[in-house]
Amino acid sequence: MDRGNFGNRFTAIMAMAGSAIGLGNIWRFPYMVGQNGGAAFIIVYLFFALFICIPIFLSESVIGKRSQLSTFGAMEKYAPKGQWKWLGLLTVFTPLIIISYYSVVGGWSIEYLLKSLSFSFTDPQLSRDGHSAIFLDFVSSTWKPILLHTAFMGINAIIVMAGVKKGIEKFTKISTPILFLLVVLIMCYSLTLPGAKAGVIYMLKPDFSKLTGSAMLSAMGQAFFSLSLGVGCILTYASYLKKEESLLHISVLTSVFDLSFALIAGFAIMPAVFAAGIEPGAGPGLIFETLPFIFSTMGLSAPWLSNIVAILFFVTILFAALTSSVSMLETGVAYLVDEKKMSRPAAVGLLFAGCWTLGVFCSLSFSSLADFKILGNSLFDFCDKLTSNFLMSFGSLLFALFAGWKMKRSDVYDELTNGGTLRGSVKMFGVLYFLIRYIAPLAIILIFATNLIL
Ligand code: PFF
Image 1 (cartoon, rainbow, N blue to C red):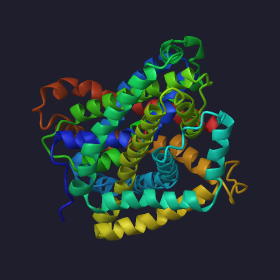
Image 2: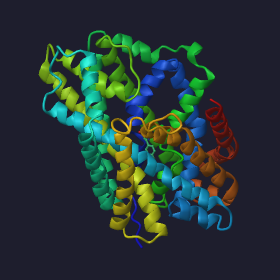
Image 3: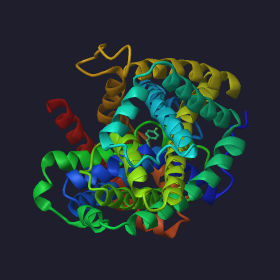
Image 4: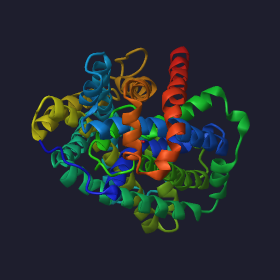
């Protein structure tokens, strides 16, 4: 069966960068930088991206590109006897859990895009608490968030149903560059606001005293989430690469794009937050409660301009969320198509039904199911913590160990250097292989241990 593949290097990188760039870059990264020591955090984050994330990215992509299969099949191919494939199968569930709650937030961004299109952020009288109340009213209502979650999942299903070339490639090769353009435009606008300087200082001033052990671990966790590692997404996308592509090239470029997007998003959001005289909030609240307030107060002098920026901003969030969520759905679909020989439409339909249902419960955890707790967390928070704190680190460890210890060294060498023909990769191979075998697994075990203890 023709699995499809990415047409060229540009489209492959746009698809991978699209998966990496998502809600994690727009709301998580900026406030983490602020809370954990500004530039000091960025330096540590860069260090982790280089020495841990790139080796894991390479491990996943070596397994995927070599096998031309998705997670379970790839592991079965190289380790038919052991337990590896079952562990691999576990990772197939991670992106499906993530998409269920991610899609709820995707639905919220559709709501806010519609609000901005109807010029709803123009009332300068409304306080920040007023905007928070509107947000809380919306998420705690029953039907509208479910309807929008359904719409968001539906868009994903349509894109993934169309296949790798006609769906994912076509969508991400247009939307990923647009995302960059939009976020740069918003940053330019933010930086010109009076009082923006405080936001820039907030992002750039290195405060090494805040760089505690837990800040370092947050940096590592954020780096995994942001690069979509440990869930088989990169593995699956790499299985659609043409043989002549350079994995080192692709992994470095994807990481650079992801990091630059996070930094630009930080410089787009923080100056606006400070210009409006607000303490930087955390999590989804920063986007959905604080920013509408900022748009309406700034609208005093030029309401049309602030409304256009609001529209651009919520389009950016929606596109960023979509390019990530299609990669999650595709990972599950690839497994069903490769291993269970399902047709693509049947696989998409089955996963749509499962993820949609879990997502409905996640959405209801803000309303009628608010009292239903798992280990003290609402279902939404539980799914988020389970995946980002545990399952992603587990998957990353598994892939690094598999490429480093289970696959033959000669196979890894062959795939990373394209049979010794890529000079740069040949030179770097010794270092990369050492990072894959020793440094990345040890670092992940450290995160695991700390997450269990804390
Ligand atoms: N990298 C995405 C973000 O930063 O929002 C999140 C993500 C995408 C996580 C794909 C997991 C995944 F499989």
